Image (cartoon, rainbow, N blue to C red; front, side, top):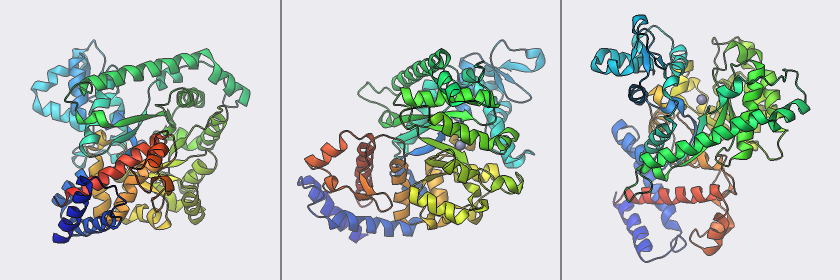
Length: 506
Ligand SMILES: [Zn+2]
């Protein structure tokens, strides 16, 4: 401990004397080594580890469904305030008027009965699932339709909840998967068949209906963000922690919909990214093992590539792929989903990637993902609940050992009753990863984010800073960072690492 203290004192003295990080280049490196040694000492103690990881700077959460990130208690509170109803047999929330004779009562009425209220929380999450008779898979996916009617008008509150939770865990960047406008798009009668041509897609994308829905989604986003800032008191002298979080959006397409609806969803999702810089990439979501998702997989991958070709600017894609396991689907469905997401649909990131070991070209695929820098968004708790895949059966170490970039994410922290710190702790406790790996997982969340601009690093695997930023405080570095949203957040993360490592000794 004395060694950590003395190194920190050096850094502290350097900082108060106004010196930059070039004054004593060895000090940050040696201090990292000391913190690494401290981390090795506490990593077997769950309480100390949680405390350490809660404060540990995390680059971001790249796989985070906004609706599934809200805790049931919030949905129930909003639904009660908004006069919504709840079905007493399924605990599904619905709009008023309530039909009490049919067991559809005001949500507010269940607050006085603790047992019923707690039953509703269980039904809208995977809490206490071990005492039920339904599979993790089915319970997890059933929750979304139970709370979906509590969402309209509460998008600002939802953003405030996830932003505050992230900031408190030293996480300052979120790419939120959202379904804004998706259901309006799904009901469009556009007349484009599943045997579309490029002209059909172009006409649809340029048409009035898509333009109108995209405009509505952008207005909704404006209102939600304004409400969030209001709730978080961002314009006051005592802003809440969430004000410091940068939020970007990934519009979702829902893979269990019929082909005509998916065409509209894709048109909206891609158009939003082209029109509004807060929308940074598209995502394909929902159970990959559903009948339509399996049947249409190839067609859906082709649609994503064809839709991307309608736009003059690149539209980044991150796709749920390989969220599967043997038994859940026939073996034939396991052999190429990740490969096709990469090669056919042009995915820059993969969500889950659990079934990678079943892919027919497994070693080649890992090599490709490593060489092309295709990151896997790892969701350990979600994979354990939905697929029953955990520990050595999870490909976490396969990806790590192959040099495939990874980041840790929550998937649906409200449904799973977790937070991002929990996922870092799970990775440490399950795979005994080092402090250096921990930092890489954190940095990857910004390096492989869809933020525009050049990276602070020349070679992401080793995180060597670009020549201009060898000295972070230099004018040339500031000039480099200024036009790059990505480099700006990366620089802030490096500063947070420094402060975190200093704080361990003081
Ligand atoms: Zn997901």
